[in-house]
Length: 95
Image 1 (cartoon, helix red, strand yellow):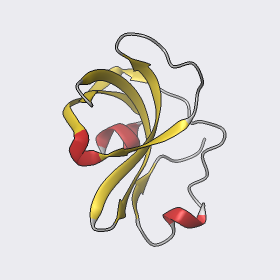
Image 2: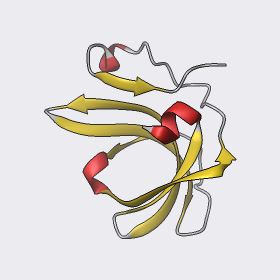
Image 3: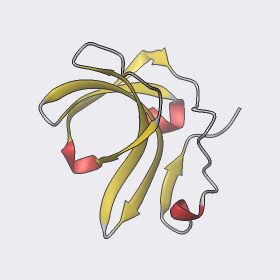
């Protein structure tokens, strides 16, 4: 939640690989917590394309907010998207 509220990068391990994420929104689906985030780095390398991905929160291990790493919101991110309606717990604010 801190990473989203402060728009700071999150380092974690996902599917046994280190990742650096820019988390945009935290929400529920089927009584589970999910975060939509842009993957900035996986296994030490940037992804081929920039896109918003969905991560099950319970799959993010050893999460750590990096105070010195702010991020910009992905232009395609829309917190008003119908899929987030009524299930959003916290979304990064535009601007």
